[in-house]
Image (cartoon, rainbow, N blue to C red; front, side, top):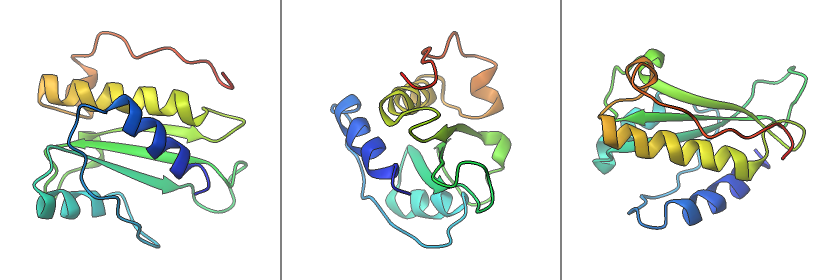
Length: 130
């Protein structure tokens, strides 16, 4: 989770015109927790940052899950994921650009996940390690 703070800082800059809700830290959380928190906060979009499971090649890797109009029962097909966030993969700044893009497009199209992917034009291109 050492990559979470740089991602959040970069996002705050990129989404400076957004009213951002609270940052919540939860141990042993799952992606669906963002749905419950989103409902409680009346969020239009939620972002869940999760450390990758132990045993993977990049133990410090982070995944970001973006959900439009979160509510209990959302499926993973209704979310977008930016993964492999770590210094040797997608760096924090490049990840923040992609997360901000998905978040803005979610509001524009009123969807995330498969529904957004079918409407999207092009994701910002950021090579690994930039």
